[in-house]
Structures are given as C-alpha cells and as structure tokens.
Image 1 (cartoon, helix red, strand yellow):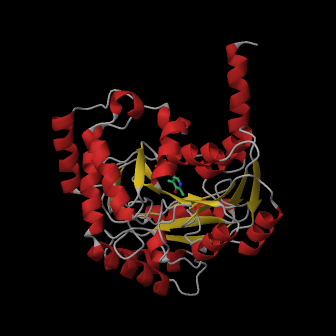
Image 2 (image 1 turned 60 degrees about the vertical axis):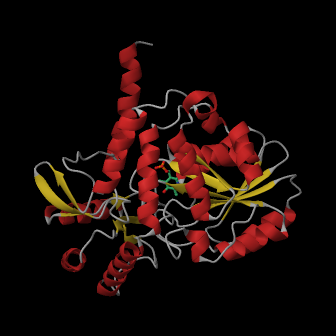
Length: 389
Ligand SMILES: *Cc1c(COP(=O)(O)O)cnc(C)c1O
C-alpha cells in the first residue's frame, strides 16, 4: 500500500466526521487565558475555560514561575525516581497533603497521567473496577488499562448508588475499586460521595475520586469535594485533583494514605516512566495553593456569579448544577453549534459540546463560570441567550 493510499483512508474518515458535523478545530488565543480572550483580533468574553478562580493569568503565580525557573532551571532532568525530584516538587507534595488532609501526595505532569497511575495499579487479575458511566475519558482509559491487566470492569448508570451496591454485593473480587468523578465535567453535577463512601466501607472497597472540577472551588477553603461533603481523608480513598483548572497552572496530584502513595510511587507506570514536571511549575503551584487557601473572596464571587446566571436563565434548559460548570442543553448537534456561533458573533465564547464527548441527542453549551467574571459579564450572557434561544 502506498503512503498516499494510507492518507486517503484517513481523509475518508475525516470526511465522515465532517458530514456528521463533528469536526473539531482549535482557536488560537492571542492573549493570556482569562476573562477576556483575544482571537483573530477580536476580544471575546471567555466562558470556555476551566480557570474557575481566574488564576491562570495571575501575576503573582507567573512571578513565582519566573523566580522558580531562575532558581531551579528550566527542566527537572529526569523522572522523579531517577534524579528529577527536586525540593520544590517535594515541598509541593507536602503542602498538598496538608491541605487535603491526607498523609501523603504525589504530583504528576497532567491529570490524565495521574488517573492512569491509579486504577490500573490498584486493580489487576482477580480484582474488579466499578465505574460511573459518565466518568471522564481519562478514567475510562485507566479502566481499560486495568481490564488489559486482567481486572473485571463494571460500569454503573450515572450516580446510581443502588446499581453500584448490587454490583458490589455480587462481586467476589479480591480487591474492589470504585472510581468516580466528584464533579462531572460535562454535567456539573456532584457524585453522591457520602453514599458511595458508605458502600466502599460496607464492601471493603477502594474509592478513587477525580476532583478535577472540585479542587480549589468546593469545600470551606477550596479543599474540594470531600470537604464539601464533610468526608474524612480515609485511607481507603485515593483523591486525584488537577492543577491546571482552578489552580491555574498545570499538573495534578494523587493524595492518600502513606502506604497507598508509596505503592503508587513503586508501581504506577505513568508516574515512574515519565520526566518530572519542571520544578518551576511546582514553585508556581505552591503560590497558587497559597492563593486558593486564602481565596474565600474568590470563591464567594464565583458562587454569586453562578447564582446570578441560574436565576437569570430560570426556565431555560440548564442542567441542575451548583458548580462552575453550567450546561445549557440544546439537543441537536447543528443547533448547538449555530447557537455557539451566534454567541461568538456577540463577543461571547461559549463552546458547543457534542457527541461523543456527551451522549447522543444532548449536545449542549458548556458555560464555565469564573471568579474573574463580573456581574455585567453574566448579564451580557443571559440577555444574549434569551434573545437567541
Ligand atoms: C481535565 C480533567 C482531567 C485531566 O486533567 P489534565 O490535567 O487536564 O490532564 C481528568 N479528569 C477530569 C474529570 C477532568 O476534567
């Protein structure tokens, strides 16, 4: 087969994707991530990022990054276990452990890698994984890796605790691992963590929680979803949090008991076989963590903007979310894209999310609210949506 024939096959598949109205494209930002994005010379209000506290463009964090690079250099030089674990990485781990209340934490370059390190390391032959059907793609990939390692995998209907209990009760797996998002990334709703934790206790299971969208936002001082529900830092919980969303920088952590973390450090392939993030990233994250801990005013502003949006769009097809993720259901793929384009033309960047990212027939606008938004920004979005929809 000639090389051009290989390309022709891909082009045909791309044409199918285009015919289904599912072509993906990127927009180039000519500005820092923040409340306002400059794209193609135009300024738009940004409701498209996960920068929930407005920290991605924070000057103090950028300064910590620059200072960190001058003090520690640009690169870590190796994986953590070889020679790439520097003082800023170690300090950040300790700060995250103290903040989340767990004995220990490990940091990763991305949340995707962090999730790949947990489930397939805990669950192999003779074990079973129980996963919510709406879990994030990275958790699904982690589950598939566990399956490749010989684990049995079961998915339960979204937030269906009774179904989860039936699956747990029927299982005689040696090790049981429940895996769930804490805040679901396309719906914005919370997992019923107290009920799931009670099941983990009753059936002696591990509980892996992905708090990508809760960390920094929920809990008394941004500790995340466990604090929101007043749940303990139990040794049966492994808590993953990402550091590129509310924390505004990049990377992720997994927190847990000292033993569980030591186990991941020894056996987690996506921890072991990758170069440690640049140490300056850890310096920036220490600064970000400090701002999050002292960020009650940011969180109060975020919550006020969320309440304002929901009140202004009462009666419209917003999913019942109390978090920064506010999905506006359109249904049809083309209609969602058309609405997103019309908003764009009014200077409002609200992405349309289509299958396969969300179930068929539930294409939506994914409105991300940030502490950086003003009341006027939210009013602008409300009146545009009322006019267009
Ligand atoms: C974004 C996200 C991840 C991946 O984190 P990255 O740091 O972006 O790789 C994992 N889980 C959930 C629920 C997410 O939203």
